[in-house]
Length: 165
Image 1 (tube, rainbow, N blue to C red):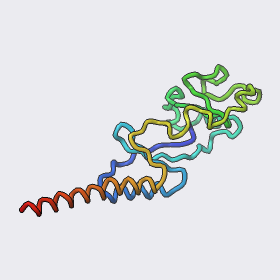
Image 2 (image 1 turned 180 degrees about the vertical axis):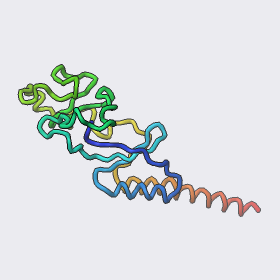
Image 3 (image 1 turned 120 degrees about the vertical axis):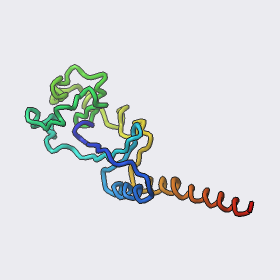
Image 4 (image 1 turned 135 degrees about the vertical axis):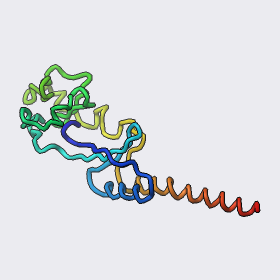
């Protein structure tokens, strides 16, 4: 979803309080947190204000920020064009090599006009993250499992040691 989100690395949480801080992020709309290759990220779904509503092309392409210039479209899992998504690995010949906009958008084939997001193989949530939290309730449940179950186990160990004496 190029130009429709950004992900920022965050510190790896260690304490219950750290995890609760992440739960606070997840209380907000269009936020998720994921872990990939052991690194934690805050994902913010927020479309770039310079992305054209008509054809999803960059309106400041020649003057775009450096971070955008470093980004390669070939690294993107999919490119959105209106309501239809296109797998870049099997890209359409009508996509611009420069900025991956549809060169025939106003005259695109009927099948492209009918293609819906739900039909796409690359929909959100299909990534193989180690962990992926999309709301505060998921994080709250994770905190309970991670910390409360450990406390219960520690109590059992302490209790069993106390009876051996």
